[in-house]
Image (cartoon, rainbow, N blue to C red; front, top):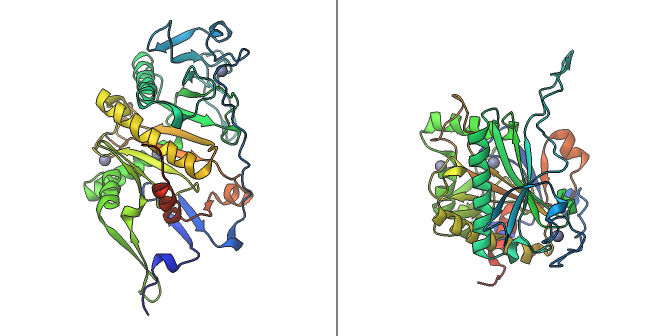
Length: 365
Ligand SMILES: [Zn+2]
Ligand SMILES: [Zn+2]
Ligand SMILES: [Zn+2]
């Protein structure tokens, strides 16, 4: 029996293992009958340049807590960083550790900062200039450097952005956040541990291996019983964008229909080491990738976050095995009880199909 070429497959229904963290998997189920999800409605976007009552707009600086940093200058700021008025973690050390039976807590110690991404109220990421995006991603780096350097109780600094109500973005003025916490989050630790495990076995960084695979190889999927070839995948089909220093990839086991990851082509574990030259190229690939998502989805709502090697990671995975990356997760549907209950994400668009759409959509160069 001949192998079925991918274009003749009208439905995929398979559990895909996350190669970075094999305990995490995704059900890719594209058959119409397998679509359990409710599509998220596109929210109308606030595209105004300036809003008189907005605390993040120019002229309203006294409506926010005092500023921590501004770029490029205080008088003519384009990016402004302030303490979060409603921090999820704070400086308050007064509450004692609390435990009863199996329930335990640790202090909610940490820092929570807001980065006002742009002085233009309603600008989309894809509409910002490459130079501005380089400055923004440089601001994330600067906050990580400063927070880790000035407070050795902090174990992880997470820079992230929520955009749109479906992604938890509650304030319409474009902004990101930095949360510094006293523990390494489980999902980051799982990536660190699993990539260290891969490194111990293969003497290679798994992220570098995936990049190489995306750029060169073909993969074959065999039928488990008969051993026959079920499908051949051109792994290069997962590449959405490639620039001088970076690659944007559609993960094979994508949790979200339009999820894209951005990684440096060269092995770097710690985001804090990014150079000015690399930042400007990162601005470029972010702009191109967000433009593609916007062109395909129209009014894309998303979360993104940076995963970087935790610096005080005593003995638990090292700079050779971990590779920093940005995960962009567009929110096009609401998670179901099945997903929460089974801990298994359901993706109803095959990553191959999504990658083709993202790669082929035309954007302004
Ligand atoms: Zn505003
Ligand atoms: Zn690597
Ligand atoms: Zn990650």
